Image (cartoon, rainbow, N blue to C red; front, side, top):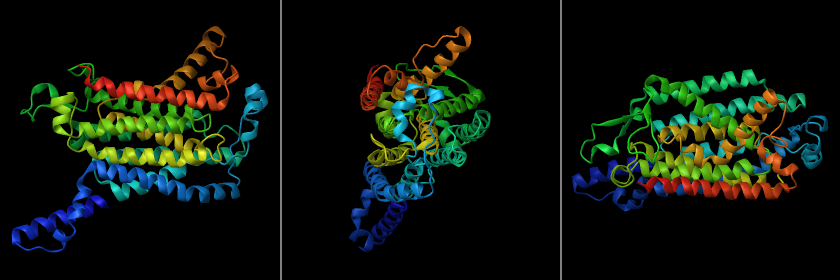
Amino acid sequence: MLYWIYQTWKNAFIAEKQAGVEGWAHTFDVLNLFQYITFRAALACMLAFIVSIIIGPRVIRKLISLKVGQPLRTADEVHKLAELHGGKIGTPTMGGVMILTAVFVAVLVCANPLNPFVAVCVCTMGACGLLGFCDDYKKVKEKKSAGISSRTKLFWQLVIALIAASFFYFKKEISGFEDPTQGFRLADLKIGIDAICFPLFKEPLLNLGIFVIPFFAIVIIGCSNAVNLTDGLDGLATGCTITSALAYAVIAYLAGHFYLATEYLKIPHNEHIGELAVFLMALVGAGFGFLWFNCYPASVFMGDTGSLAIGGALGSVAICTKQELMLIIIGGIFVMEALSVILQVGSYKTRKKRIFRMAPIHHHFELGGWKESQVIIRFWLISIMLALFGLALFKIR
């Protein structure tokens, strides 16, 4: 909305200037502020936070009245962990609707929803959130910790991811990036969307061609499931989401500015991508707002509604900025959580031995004697350091 207000004001201002008159556009020249991504991104963050705080108590009361409580695994399934988390039984889940609502409102007000990068990220986030909602609904309806079957969930994740990946590949505004290695004036030379880049290397590592579509799908599905696995302790996934989204907001802003991207940082540039910073700051604000209720001890859980949506959004953002591999660093906690599950399952199936006390790895530390609050805060600190380290790599060469 603010972006369109600026466009209307700009057209009126130019018309008045050409006509040599001073009308309403000259009177309200403060509307010029709405052109700046930094201003609208900050506003989106604050608006998403306020929306979350306002609707939070109402959503929680509604979830409680509907008896949408989080079903936990039994003592037979998780042994000692059931004793540690037994008090959480009945805590309302599906709180991810708060995050989605806050993000969508902030994007509609502060961003340009028709921007191709914003549109694909919002749609991917919404689709993954809907899938997560269906999973949560089945859990609470049947009062079991198992929701939609793994195969069914993976199938729909694949459908969503392939649609998004195809959009990335075939949408003209998204599929071309300025090549920072070819000089300031050769804007006709492009890095294709199929190029895999990393800040430490001047040239793309490789070009996958149309095979980049399954690669993008893997990124989205992997990130979505990684965030879902991380969402096991109060506020853990939310805090890590905030740091990752903040880091990618900076990257998106820099990649959207020709001089900063091509002359200073030497990273792929696209003139449309800066708008993505507004979407990401909306996610940051929604994360802070949700954390208000989700911090230890949590009064609401995001559920798969929130975790799958956030993962889908972060995976899409990594693709949009051409920094898919950086997600391994910036989203290091998510990667560590997913990797711990893969290693645990692989080790048990091949050697009949477990590597960790329990996976995901945050439960390993819990069972090792760390208090839940200690695990959460220490993982947050690691997430902050990884995000800062990831950003530092952009000017290392």
